Image (cartoon, rainbow, N blue to C red; front, side, top):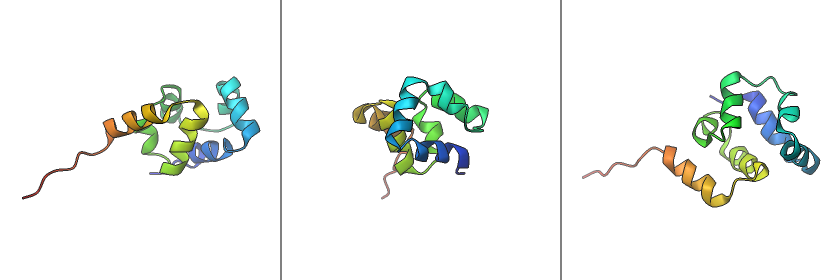
Length: 89
């Protein structure tokens, strides 16, 4: 299920000034959005798996770029929670 306020936050962070403000004072920016406690906890813990259930994948990736997570670390965490493919045959 998509989370509107989480998605709105991630979308708003595309504005360079808002992204810079978020990096400088995450709590101040988060206070502007009525984000559910479990989503806020996932943000504070950089929980890629939990956040991936709540937002569009493009917004998720962009968020972690703004938050300063490297591409390699993001992909590592994303792969760790991705459903495993099963072999058929």
